Image (cartoon, rainbow, N blue to C red):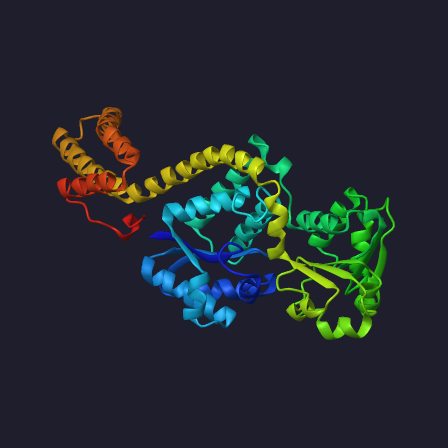
Length: 430
């Protein structure tokens, strides 16, 4: 068995590739069932966010398992394998374990230390459990990664200096216009990302904010969370009117096709009217042809790298603090993993010695005859069990403690040879 992660992120693939592979929540059950139907995939779950799509699997055969995940991604994204492969990264076992720890802690995020990713890792774990695609190994790995993410946020100051994608978008908007309070702002969508955009805009002094949403009810639910300010609410039927009367527009809907394109904007905007669009959706809500309009600027999630770069040095120092914590959590997982590898050998040894003990005890008691009292039999039984446990204790402790894979496997092979134990498939970890 081996743990493998195959995926792509903002570091390896542009947004136009990432959006093709994005898996919305309603499609997740079918996607996980498809993954688990492959012959070499034992467990699977998928982390899908605007900046990454990562498939975590436990495979019975590494090369075949990687090939199956790659095939799944190519089919899902409708991209030929040879075109997709350059954008993918593949990490095996300890590298895969450390990667998930770093992702959970926000150390692999576009915005270093951002807090939303931990909630997304928790959601990935929950969904995998819900659809029974996560079993013992990935369940333990994700629990350890969530613990790592929590520790990094409570034991370091990385969360205080870092921002989320939504706050980076607002920060970029502030750089572009300087005075947010003087700007008419529209937000398309009323979900979690939109709520965060509103929160960050208000913290930076914005006052003229319109929410445009498919349903007015959803917009009202968002507005209820900001009762101290007046948010103007509109439905998508009024979208173009609101967009063209705004100076800044943030798009954060779950739409799978672009809401805004060149033709729509060209038909509604006044000649030379400036407009700045901040598209933080994946798939994108703003078509790439909007960039062709002379007075319209479009920024998507990839453009946020410029904002993130400004605070990089201080965040890097915080990340170095966090790495030590992650090493501890990786070692905790590795220790558990090592115990998995040795458990069948230890169990076989115990069973064999116990069978010998029971057999020899039965022979001895039969020779002693019926006059040997039941109480005496119990004492002898306890004595033999105690001797067996004492003899086995030290070898078992030493076997579990071996950190070097080859040394551990050599020790297990020696034990199996000396005691004539059968090897089992459960020992094929790592």
